[in-house]
Image (cartoon, helix red, strand yellow):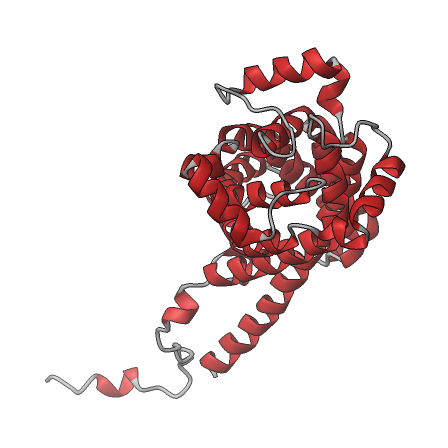
Length: 331
């Protein structure tokens, strides 16, 4: 005779399943490292703004040392470059063009770091020691970032020149558009990508390797994930200095293309990288390709330290915020 079997499925000693949290698009959108896409963008934007605003005077010195023609400083001495700028324009001369950088650095670095994080996750497969993946992700990041930053970087460098004929950012943009057309804003884009691709590949690979190495040295094996501000700053400075030194010749070419025809600087008919290289070597010899290497390294070492430590601090802030929100959503 059949009996009711349902009671044996209602035993109190059976372990109940924990309640499942409701589906939340906010939780589903979380990327690796516990951050969402827009949070990578904000962290990168803040890091880029802080980096460029803090180091802008050094960038001005580098630009004036790299430009050729009647207006730039001929001496390769950083001290003489500073004295010349201060004599001509005073302390404000070190900050000419900072408005253009303020407009470009935030969006460019938002693209830079968000693309890097997405590509790093995709290329590395979660392997923190995959330096080739870090380098490839850095190259993708710089292509996207340079597309955003190049126009404002050109405006910034023209304003940085001694005796610049432009009154400000808007005046420079208007006059360049009227005289040379929209293409002038991207005259150095190919050179910038060719420079920043190896720069970023070296920078990101060196940073990730240095960060992991320093973390292993400064922490016990049980706490390798606990990275400190000092580790981020030190790894960033080392990576920035190395990458800056290796790519100085292309940076000189970029400056030439962006400042051509201003303050007596040479204008290039073809705008090709080879043409600029030949002009520099003819005027200054091969040493001309390393003009401004000292302020470039002085810029990128602390700038990278500032940028990476700010970026990692912003990521930590968002991670803590996300963890708190996720706990609240589950409960």
